[in-house]
Image (cartoon, rainbow, N blue to C red; front, side, top):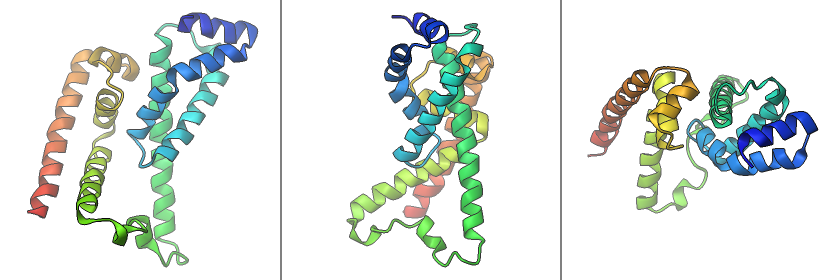
Amino acid sequence: MSDKELVEQIVNNNSQRAFEALVNRYQQKVINICLGFTSSIDEAKDISQEVFIEVYLSLPKFRQESAFSTWLYRIAVNKSINATRQSKKNILVRLFTKDNANANELFIPADEASIPDTKLTKREDYAALKNAIRSLPQNQHVAFTLNKYQELSYKEIAEVMEISLSAVESLIFRAKTNLQKKLAEHFNKKI
């Protein structure tokens, strides 16, 4: 069944099977989008659940002016951005409360001593990459994440972000340039 047919069955007949089919079709893609904005797979899965709840509740309002996948990805991006903002607020609150004697635990893995040097280096490099991506301006971050994590075409990204194709090209070019600068700093420190 096509997405359109599944959406119609959900809206008109409240079909649970049709909704399950949509979830099964898009769940991994939504998790991948969310993972581009979060620091853990568990957090990405939690956000993806919120995305599908929002989709289920909002389907009657979906006007089908764009593809279902475009609409879904837009919700996933917005939920991910909101969750990231909330997470940053929570970390700051925990860091600056008197009860937080172990603030460094937020940034240092508990089992760091048991990780061999090569794994630690790879982990540090991965963390540097994730931090560099997170530090991009929001539109660059969204465009880059949709392109690299979700492998959406520039045209699809333009539809999800509701911007022109040339704007997407520009955002991704600037994101790559900014990431090269930030990662060059990280790797130069290691030399």
